[in-house]
Length: 253
Image (tube, rainbow, N blue to C red):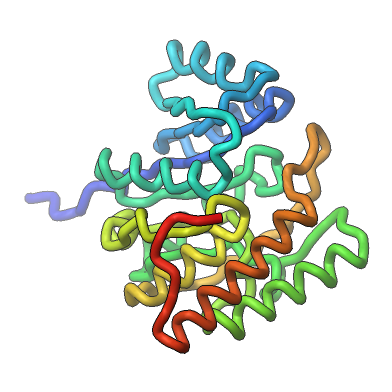
């Protein structure tokens, strides 16, 4: 009797880090327990607190962990692009991106993978803004700001998801391979809106998976008002540029 079952999809879990030594060892342990068949890639931007050094030392004893070391200040968006390029080059089937600060619970990776493995969607989007999703630990002004930015993004970029700014997602790598990463202009947090926009233009399909965002307990957030203003400006450039046929195509910001 022949076995016609297809092999299980290969999965890469990508984590971008800068000064996350208080979180990364615990996070890697929980990811390995939650998804033991997956590999982990840490993209570290020369963290002065030893995050990259710890990763390199642990990777020497754990075959499922790999590290990419980059220069400091290169930007979160370019770190995720580096992970996407790695996933394409190594021919993974799925790539999950999550933050290093436990705002995305590693156990919820299973929910994203369940959708990606059992459907034809190209991006399973971890969503705070669908039923059963939510945010824990944010003050009211931050909740309102996030809701406003997501509405602004949905309208300008015509995205079919409610949570456009979150980074907790599972991407089908074959779909990522259709993109020209050199056209992506965002280096910072607005990358997460821009990549959805470019995937939509490439014909990708999306499904939102509820999760509850939990504010970090250790370390400090890297986002600031300057980064938020840059994101709003970039989203406007992309949205209005596509309407008038002049969307930016060169690296900027």
